Every structure is written in C-alpha cells, then in structure tokens.
Image 1: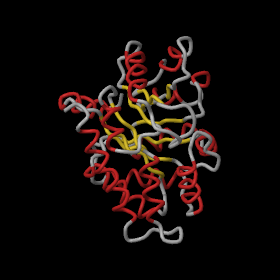
Image 2 (image 1 turned 135 degrees about the vertical axis):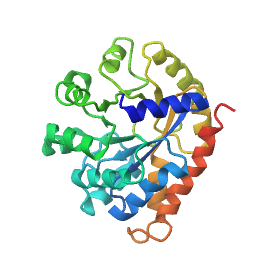
Image 3 (image 1 turned 90 degrees about the vertical axis):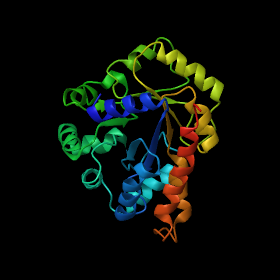
Length: 274
C-alpha cells in the first residue's frame, strides 16, 4: 500500500467509519470543470478519489459513464491531461489517495513503463484496470507494485472459491468488490448479500474491502458501509454532472451539482456505523 493509502485507512479505522470513494470521469465535461470538481471532492466528503481515464470502448461501464467518457474524449482529454489534473490537485492536497480507473488499451498505447513512471511522478497512488486479469500480471500489475503503486483488483458475485485466491494475489491498496453482476449503475445492491460476500472475502485477505456498482443514494451507502471498509460511488456523480449540462457544455451549476451529491451521500457513509 502507498503511504497515503495506508494513512487514510488507518485514520478511518480510528474514526470507525468506512471510506467514501468517489469516481468521476477526468475531463468531463471539460478540463477546468473536471479539475474544479476534483479539488472540491475532499471537502465534500470524499476520502479516496477514483479518476476515470476515458476510453472509447468501456465495456464494464453503464450508459452514464460511457457518455461521460465520450464527452471527455470529444473535448480532447487523454492520459497526459489526467496526469496534469493530478499534479494540479497535488499542489493543494498531498494526503487524499488518488486511484486512476480505466482500460488497458490507452495505457498500452501510451507505453506501460512510461505510464507507471508518469503516474508515480504525478502523485497517483494506484490503479484499477478492469480488463487486465491476474493471468496478465506481468504486463502491468507486477511492474506497478515494483514501483510502489497499488494495483487494485475487482472481485464480483461470480468470483468463485477457485478464482478468488488468484484475484487476491498481487492485489494491494484495497479490494474492489463489485456488488452486482452487470455494468455500472445498472441496479441497486442488496445489503445482506453484500455483507455476506464482504465477510467471505475478508476471511481470505487483510486488505480493506470497498464496495461499488449501483450505490446511488445516502441510504444505500449507509447500508453498504455497515459491512464494507469503503463505499464507492460513481454513476450518481457522473449523472449529476450530465444533468447540469447546457447543450453538452458545462453550466454555472455543473461543479456544485457534482459536489452536492457527494456531500449528500457522504452523510450516509458517515452514519453507517452510528
């Protein structure tokens, strides 16, 4: 685990509360608005930031995040601009862990070693690359760990007993448990089923378990946070940004719309163990 990630989970453990992990798409709807949202996330209640790297074929993402990625790409956003955003964020905040999330194709085109070096230099703590299975660990996971970056893996309701140890091997930072089968934002998770799954995974690893996919309200976040070490929210934030747009462009309410939904759900996360 990077020091920022270690420190953050230690602080949360002292406060006996789950992490609130917020996802948004870098560059959506434009660089300046996206950076303003990112800079506002910690004060709105985010403990860990997931920064989406846009890709033209995001197979694990639902319609809202797909649309955000296309808006971002249309605006000229790319990996160098993601790194630029992180460097700008780090000018004022060197404590909040940042995880980039996306697909391997843009990383491969960029050059995996250069990607890892630039990510570390920018101040990124880890990555979630949803289409790189454990069988391809030599491609990016092992080199990332060697450079001191977390490689966060996804476990799902269909990850069986035989597969789970493979998924957990070489994972660091936290385990991202996907609470539903299907794409992001598609359905609401069932808290009792999630609690049972989290307990099952916890018996196999000392890493924190953060739960995402389908969490859209403070009530859902609170219910999930009772069992999980962290609650991940993405589609609700991305949808708030989309709803604020004026003819596809940022409006006067775009940044506040994103941060307001974060503040609202943060209250649910913080009340999970009251």
